[in-house]
Structure formats: C-alpha cells, structure tokens
Length: 388
Image 1 (cartoon, one colour):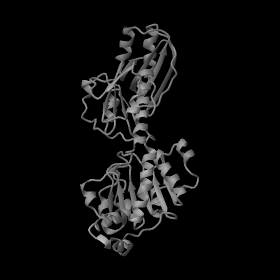
Image 2 (cartoon, one colour):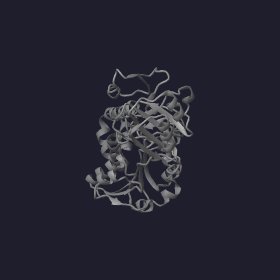
Image 3 (tube, helix red, strand yellow):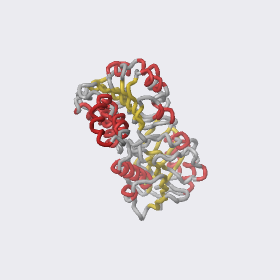
Image 4 (spheres, rainbow, N blue to C red):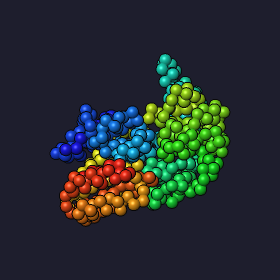
C-alpha cells in the first residue's frame, strides 16, 4: 500500500479519487511515498529522513515553495497542475482591469466614509462621484506577458471585451498557439509591448530570469499612466514600482502579492492572493495532482513534471523498472548490459531526458532477481530505481 501525506488542506473531491485499497492518505502519515502540497514551504523538509519519498504533487502551478534541485538529486519527481486554476485567475484579472480603470476601489472606500451622512448621503454621492471617474477598457490596448494557460485566456477574453491586445511569449507552445485568438497582435519584443499598451498584465513563472523584470528600466519604456496587473508572482515586479507610482508614470498597480511597503504605497490595489481561491480551482488542482501522483506511483508514468520529462508507456510484461538517473552517455547501455548478464529480457522500454536528468521505464517479461536489481541500483548516477 502506498502512503500519501497531505500538506495544507487538499480538496476532498480530489483525494477521493485515490483507490482505498492501494493508498493510505492523511496529514499525519509518516515516511510517505508521496506528498500532496499547496503553498506550504517544503524547503526545510528533511528528505534524508524520508528515503521512501519518490514524488511530490503541487496542487497549483507555482513550485517555488519546493526545493527542486534537492528533489532532483534525490530522484524525487515534482508535479504541478498547470491550467487547473487558469479560469479562476483569468476571471480575477478581468476584474482587475475594471478596478484599475474606473477607480471603483477608491470610490467604495470613499462612499463608506459617508456612513454618518444620514439623509445627505445621496446628495454627497452625486457631488463627489466625479472624483472617481475613469475610462472604459473597450478600445484600449492590453499587453499580455506570457501566453500560457492563463495568459491565453486573458488575451482572448480581452479581445471579446473590445480591447486591442498585444501578446509576448518567445517560448509559446504549439498547443497554446492554436488556442490564441488570431486577433491578438504578436509583440516580437517587450519594448514594443511596453510602448503600445495602456494596461500590462504579467503571466510568467517566477525564476531567476524573470525576477524583477518589471523594473525601472522596463517602466521607463512604458506609456505614462500605464496600469500594471500582477497575478503571477510578487517578485517579478521590483520595488521600483513604488517610485513609479509616486511620480505618476504608473497610474495604478494591482497585485495579488502585497507586502508592507506596497500596502502603504500610492495607487496600489492590494489583493490578498485570491487568484486561485475558488472552490472550482481547488477541486481542479486537487484532481490533477492526485491523478498525476497515482499514475506515477502505480504505473511509473510521468505527466506535468517540472523537473523530469513527461513519459508514458502502456504496461506490458510481468514487471516494470522505473528509473530516475543523470542524463549522461552510456547510462542506458550500462543498465541493459547488467540485465543481459543476469539473463533478464526487456520486452518494452522508453527513455527521455530533461536537462541534466533522465527517466527510463523498462518492462520485463520475467521477475528480476534481487542481485540484478542491486547491480542496477548502484550504477553510477542512478538516483532512484523502483520495481512496480
């Protein structure tokens, strides 16, 4: 039986998909084979004390709360759930477009201050409403940085709202390109997008190359009075945004990742990380995380891994070896040589790599003796071997 530990609250409808006869699941599980996590910080997790752990499924897209390098070196597959929360985030981004345009947020706060106005409130509202007027978004230009599952939905929805849209993503996949509206303009570089857009929304993952990408230099290339929307990660926008808000270069900044400085800053609309906070999103993420984890533990198949290649092979033979190893020359030849010496016949196989790591599945037409397994297991640069 496989042991699954849940960290954070994981939607019950997702967990119910685990077959009870194969899985023991809960938040008090010791030495689990797999972990399902949302936003909890896993960087301090003691992997050395849990050698059985071979997979972590993140019920969400971002994995900056998981030590990927440490997991890869331990042969631990890390999954995420791209697209599962895309609609939830897209809807909030569309809401943010209106909030940054019409000064609805400021108007509501002002109106609440009239609570003691009694019968004069209607007249006071009519007299003061002009201070919160703002433009319509129809006919304005939106720049979408990052055309993944969320960015595409935002771009296509903005087109339907009558906006002109520029999209930028040098790494857009073929699948994503097919889903993108033909009315979205292709920005060949960020400078073009910055110069043309009244609104800019960010939908790229947080990594070294995107940290602080919206900085003083980037902002200086933008239109004066631009509105910036950040529902990706807080660190993608540098603290330079505060000076730009003070000067009026940036008219409004709405972020799902407020900190102490941003909350106090001028013309910031702080949202308390609500992008994926819908019951539908939480269910979708849990379902995808559970399905990915179960297929890997039971069948050795990998889908939506962030540190290893996606690999699928239908079951055949009597036993299956699933191996995480370094992506080096002759690795596969060495494994097959050992099995040949031990009179083990391979019926089917698949091998794929991702960066410096690789994953191999071998289906065998006989059981494998412990001696043969041990020889394969101690092969140089073998990180993990499982017999399924």
